[in-house]
Image 1 (tube, rainbow, N blue to C red):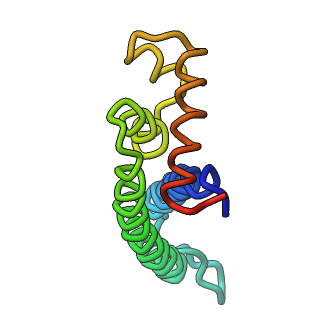
Image 2 (cartoon, rainbow, N blue to C red; image 1 turned 180 degrees about the horizontal axis):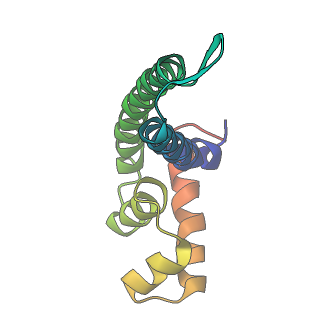
Length: 137
């Protein structure tokens, strides 16, 4: 795994968690919208069976989300340690803002009151140091 792939994996995991959280929110809304039991001759439609299926899905998805959040917290802590090896406060701040805090290069440029091109140059320099200090490609 390259240095950039490693650092980007934080963003991808965060996005995956957000997608699952949206699905969980949808399931909870569905749960609230389930109507009562409808009796149609010999069959019972909807009701408790549907509710239980949704509850099971909610519990399962919630467990997956919690496990992924734990993984994300660990990954961010590990990445912080690796970023700290860069030993240049400007580059540490830049890598942290981009890969841990999720800012775009444009947002970092605005925050630092620098041009986009300057931030791109710094980003390349910071990644090179990050690669060397962490023995990555």
